[in-house]
Length: 93
Image (cartoon, rainbow, N blue to C red; front, side, top):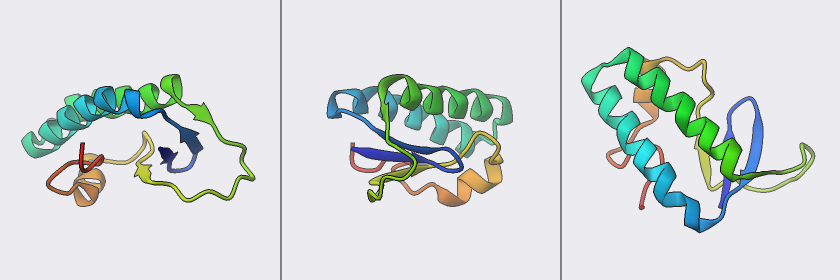
């Protein structure tokens, strides 16, 4: 799976890591639904850190369509709330 972090770049992630990302995505959605700003910030940072830790960065000049786009760490709870669907940022897992 190709994942883009807005303002940063793209990473290739093996399917075996999607379960960990989905667990963090569920926590993020719960934090947004509860309006819990501190949990939202901590979980978004953890989600992005997991992508960086588990993924392999793609070259900046690679022309590859991202299957998943994640917000950067500076996005607010309200901005991320507008991006979330019923399944969170990572649908279908």
